[in-house]
Length: 237
Image (tube, rainbow, N blue to C red):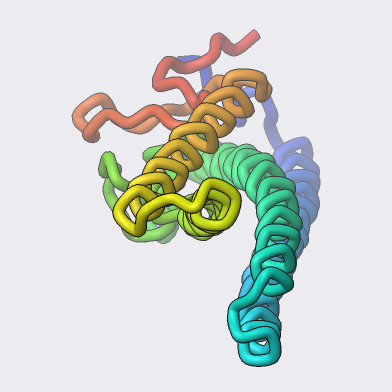
């Protein structure tokens, strides 16, 4: 693989490091802003859910679980589900954005080690701009369950619960279903919601821009491909 840093000599290397340092600072700030926005959105959604449940409890006490409570429950669950869907989609987009920004930081770190090779042993963070390199920065190894412990995954679980609760109330109120049937409908809606959200996740990632690592992790690292970050290096021109 051709060394990009080796193309610059003398004062050009000094200017290159200054440019790379500035760019790395900008990327880091963008990552911070992205994660801050994601945390605020997720926090707003979870706060809305908890507040709505408290409000439903008050309505239930006032109406003795009557018709008013049932109608209000359906309206609130529908609103929360739509809010959660927006939050879920945006959280996936921000997750992809953060991964691309982090890969860019790793690539600039690799450039620094090319310009000053003696500094390489002192970098604890990875210099590989792929998904495995991102996990190294977090002190982790690739695992199949990694995508199931993200913010988007937590939102999808709450979404499934909201969908299941709404379906159960509809079955119980409008179809006067038996308790076991109501539980089955709620469970089915919960699983269906998780499936639909997973399909949405795959669709968003399939439509996202593809990242081609220039400096992938060594081949002996366990393979893992997520968020359209391929294991093959991109050609340098």
